[in-house]
Image 1 (tube, each protein chain N blue to C red):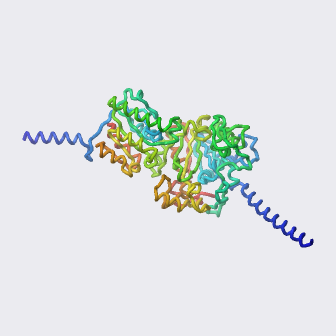
Image 2: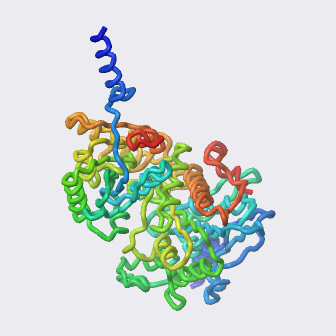
Image 3: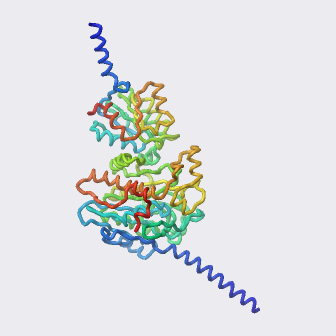
Length: 185
Length: 374
């Protein structure tokens, strides 16, 4: 009887720890800093999603180490945009360097990184892929619109590094998984 | 001697006939396209020279349609034909002018913003001069136009175009490009004057939201996109989600701060307007295209782009099965305008724009453009 009771407790604990589809029930804390990797305007789309969910966040396109003060989670939205880099007034090389630095700073401060790729095919390709890989490799969770993972770039990284990944059909489907990971009801 | 005279007379008659035919063809390009505004909402047809008298009577003195509810609300400006060879921009603006009903606020629509560019085609491109759309009341023919102002209105091009006032250097050809001319200047070259007049309109009419409708070749990265000024990126983002709900994919792009002369940059910097520029995919503008005729302009089917899409050697945005027909490109522009205005109304409920009687994306695709032209 005592053994059965212990087994039941273990089962209950496992049920709480794991979500319905078997993936760990991840939780990321707020406040959240949202930044781009490649300066596409997808960062604004991610900001709009978090705003609608009332997640405590700020969007800083060109976030640097000092923007991480008080931040619990860093959301990186990768995707190259020549217009976006023009809007920011920086080169691609400067952007790569900035993204590297903020990931390094986040790791040093034990801030978890979430990668959100919303732009599909338009934000993949030679100009975007190193930024995508950099963000994916540094992340503790990936949320990817299906079209952006047709060649399984993100799925492979997730599988190799055992990073939880959620593939969604379209941007609007990001609401449910983001609510889950940020503990929004 | 007598036979020489007869020969000379015959030759003269032949040359005069050829000159006559060529002149008639040339002058046909200078005849304004027919536009039949909605009688219930169009309260005034103005001219661009109302904002800069020095262009009065010139080929750039384009028509401006004021569609007013006479009730308080936002003022929305829609520009088609900034680049006349991008037919979907003109056609989307035309459908607005001929169909809109407005319940609050007003629309100001300029279907042929660079009217000078409608009087010619681009040299060496082999593009058609005209195209015809079947409507419920018969066929309507429109000029296909050039990307830039007619060289007869502004010539010669300098080697380097220096944008005023930034001093930015561009190819001399761009000196006739309306969407490199803003904010323009009152005593500048012809295209700068057109840009200046449009800036005056934005200011004098207190425009709240403005659209500049464009198209681009399938190989251009900024395609099926909405370009916004930084100050209205949130409305742009909301529109992208609204469009996605209707299964329409658009990319959101930010206007580069250091690229001057463009509507989405200069309108936003110099006035209180919230500017948006939209791009659709038009294969007749692309370098890979094959036969260049009205069929390509209207149906948007090109076998070379289809091959390129399937080969996937480089990135192009092209539907190899369905092509990129004009009706779909126009539908994307109109649906984009609706989505952005929904976003604007959500952000500015105190000053809304309320309107009706414009076709939906699926209506345009199902029944074609002609069904919405008078």
